[in-house]
Length: 258
Image 1: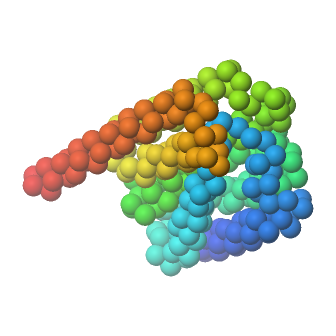
Image 2: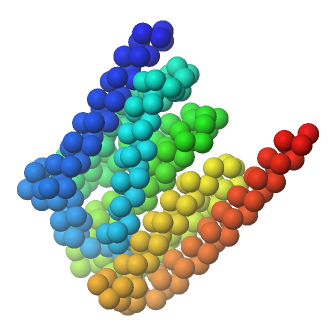
């Protein structure tokens, strides 16, 4: 890919990002499908859905992606654009497609689309592992949050299929299993990557689940087993993240002194 085509791809990515933002703003105001994103979520309660405040992380994600989308036009190397350009474009289109599916109550279709988005972000995450901290962290947070969102989407689909079973013993078991999976993913990431953004995003997501379960506006502690597993998950990830942070700093100091 020559410099001209790389430049064009950067511009296309910026436009795709702006379209993604525009569509999500319209969704939040209920313009798409006549309901807000939150309205759809409330239609299908699950034991895994994080508290509303947790979704504020989208502000961080979209801000970081916006900065990246602008910087790629001027400062990001052609190498990064070649690595990320096409997958990023695909991720924006999938984000938009998911929004339309979700807003129109096509939960199964939304799950299929978000799985595709998750795979696309995995590809990006793998490709930027050796890039700068900002690029790596931006996509690590996005990738981590979509991992959680994919699991949540699956639970929403289960509730749509069986509305009365969202808080059954079986459902509680699968929520605890999901929390364990998120923990394993975060700890594994800490063991293999010096960037802790992924794990911190998982901490934030699980905190949102716990808020839902503990607060009086949520489940008010009615599912203690889920709360217990959630707390253990938080402790394990936080300890793993602290260890990873200090070990990587120690390695950096040793490397700098050699």
